[in-house]
Image 1 (cartoon, rainbow, N blue to C red):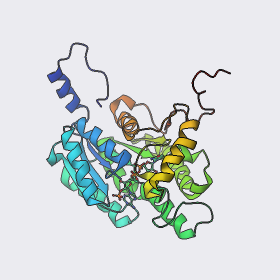
Image 2 (cartoon, rainbow, N blue to C red):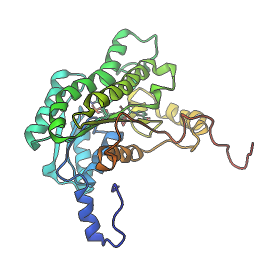
Image 3 (cartoon, rainbow, N blue to C red):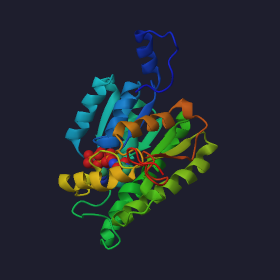
Image 4 (spheres, rainbow, N blue to C red):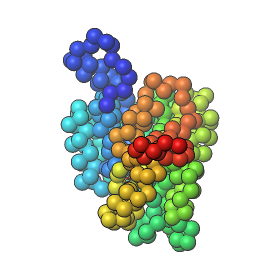
Length: 290
Ligand code: NDP
C-alpha cells in the first residue's frame, strides 16, 4: 500500500518513483517482524522505500519476511535481519546498535513484538504463576522501555518517531488474558507519557490498538485450530460490528501513516483498529431492524 495521494495525472512509472520516495532514506526498526502484524508492516515499509531492520527469534521466518519485502520492492541491501529476544536487555541494546552501525541512523521504531502468555501456559489469567506475569510484562511492556531508551538518542538526531502496538485489551477486560491486558495498559501510558516527555525534542510517539487480527497470536498462546475456529464463529464474528476479524495489513497501513510525515502533528494518540468491536453493540445481522 502506498501512503498519501498521487498527483491526478501521474503515470505508472512516476507513481512507482513516488512510491519509493515515501520512506526512502528512512531507517525503521520493526520488532516481531517474523510473523503477523510485524511482517505485514515490514512489507509495507519496504514497498514504500524504507530501509528496514527486522527482528524476531525465529530466523527462518525472518528470512521469509525478507523475501516478501524484496518481492514488494525492497532491496536486499536495505534489509537487516537481527535474531533477538526482546525480553533480554542485551538483545534490545544490540537491536538498536546493529541497526545504527549498519545504516548510520534511526528514524522510526515500531515496537510490535508481543504475545498473550508464556510458552507452556494456556492463558495469562490471574491464577497463573507470577513467573507468567513477569514474562508477559517483560515481553509486552518492559522490552518497549528498553528499546525506547536505546533508540531515543538516535531518534532525536533524526527527528524520528515511535509507534507502539498495544491492543483494545488495554481498556476492554478479558479475564483469561489479565496479565497481557495489564501489560498493554502499561504500553498506553508509556505512549502518552513519552509523547509529552519527547515532544520538545521533535519525537512523536503513538499507538495502534488492534482488535482481533488474523495472525499467529492465538496459536502462540496455545489455541488449537478447532478452538480458534469456534471462537471466531461463535464469539468474534457476532460481536464485531463489521462481522469479521481484521487482517495484519489493516494494522500495518495505520502504523505507516503514524510513522509518516502526514501524521506530523499527531502524538500521544491511541488509534483503535477493531471493526467497531470496542465501541458498543454489534451491527444488526441481515434484515433485522430495531
Ligand atoms: P504473532 O504471534 O503473529 O507475532 C508475534 C511476533 O512477536 C512474532 O514476530 C514473534 O517473533 C515476536 N515475539 C514474540 N515473543 C518474542 C520475544 N520474546 N522476543 C522477540 N520477538 C518476540 O502475533 P501478532 O502479529 O498478532 O502480534 C503483534 C502485536 O500485535 C503484539 O504486540 C500483539 O500483542 C498485538 N496484538 C495482536 C492482536 C491480534 O488479534 N492478533 C490484537 C491486539 C494486539 P518470534 O516468534 O520469531 O520471536
